Amino acid sequence: MYMVHITKFSGQTHEASYTVPAFLVRFADKVLPRAAISALAGQGIDIPAIAEARRKGNAYSRSFDVVERGISKRVFVSLER
Image (cartoon, rainbow, N blue to C red; front, side, top):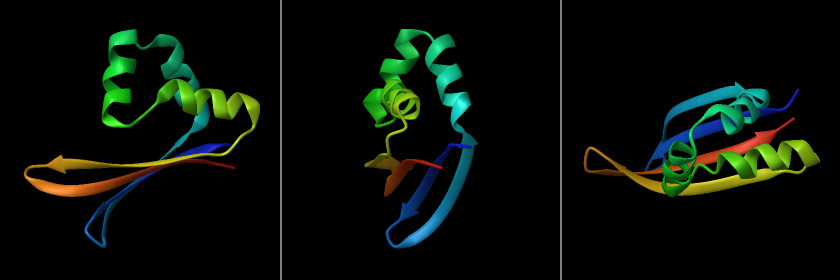
C-alpha cells in the first residue's frame, strides 16, 4: 500500500511525523475545491502531483521551508510503498 509521509524538522530536531494512506490524497484531489488545492500547492504540498505519481507508480519527494510562529522549519513530503 502506498503511503504519504510528512515529516517536520526545526533545525536538526525532528518535530513531527504524519503518515496517511495515498488513497486519501487521491480522494482529496477529487473533492477539495481548486482554491484549496492551489493554496496547498502555494505552501509546497502539490496534491495533484502526489496523486499523479501514485497513479503512475512513480516516486514523489519534496521538501520546503515554512515559518511557524516566527521559527523556520523544513517539511519533507514523500510517497512511499
